[in-house]
Image 1 (cartoon, rainbow, N blue to C red):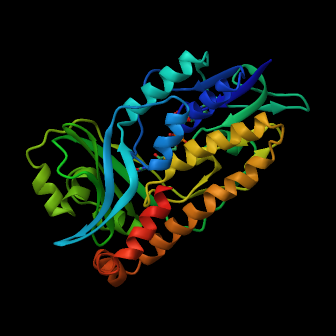
Image 2 (tube, rainbow, N blue to C red):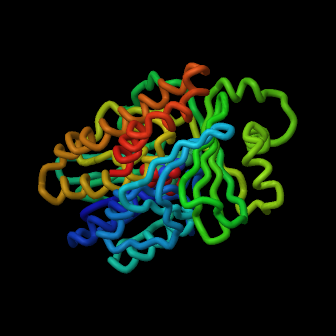
Length: 348
Ligand SMILES: Cc1cc2nc3c(=O)[nH]c(=O)nc-3n(C[C@H](O)[C@H](O)[C@H](O)COP(=O)(O)OP(=O)(O)OC[C@H]3O[C@@H](n4cnc5c(N)ncnc54)[C@H](O)[C@@H]3O)c2cc1C
């Protein structure tokens, strides 16, 4: 019997595997995708995430960013981060996490959790028997469904699309441009590479129905400044999508299984904190297991979740009525301490 089975080799699962291996646990990670795993993501790591990974010996190569800018037309509101964040291509992050996991003796296996049995001593899934299991299998977590923990979410449905462009970053900030029914995130991720992610809801999807062009191109057309800047820049990746974002779980601990990262519950990518929840959560969950108090993970998850849910929920609510949404960049520019406070809040 192994000590820990991890479902999902995303950032959460691999961080959990690394944290557990550094504590001497025997760990297996299963994921249905072989090789380097890509995913739709804005790829902006907040300073707390960068620090947590560095403490585990993971130093992905990326492009530091020093603040967040909100833009609408000529209005620019900007707030610095207390310490730099890091824009990192998901492929680079996956390779850095995998290399560290491999060096610590973690076994990475191509497989899928599609059934699960547990008793007083252990849990069986994907052909392994383990003392504990961490389910880090993402937004639509199959493990959460197997455990009958899916809960309804009351938040409106929102989605994301992302692609990369081969162009030198024009700013050392993550730029968030607000259109009437979508946001565009531009994250510097390399010397000559930026990630572009669009977040939007059903209103934008309905408006686009039947319109010509790809969903990504239709989104880009909503942001003429950005479209102009990228006009000559070659695409550097294919389009990936995700959503609906808002998912909920009734609990985070079910017997010998702990749900972590997006699998534990997620609201929206609007504040760019998903990686922070996953990475910091993975460390806390492993701490709870190592201390012999797995139930502590539920309490620790709430400590991580609440500030995220408050910031994300507030921003989602404030940006729904169109007049307020249109005014948001100007308001944040004119009340700079509010923006600095929010950026400080999501950074740490
Ligand atoms: C458009 C967009 C922009 C975003 N921007 C940012 C940002 O700028 N900053 C930020 O911090 N966060 C951002 N996020 C959120 C971030 O991407 C997620 O929170 C993060 O990827 C969660 O990591 P995870 O490991 O929990 O889940 P995932 O990355 O989804 O990994 C889950 C893994 O589980 C595997 N899996 C699935 N089913 C099974 C199974 N049955 N058995 C075993 N394994 C399975 C999958 O193959 C996958 O590899 C963004 C998200 C989106 C969609």
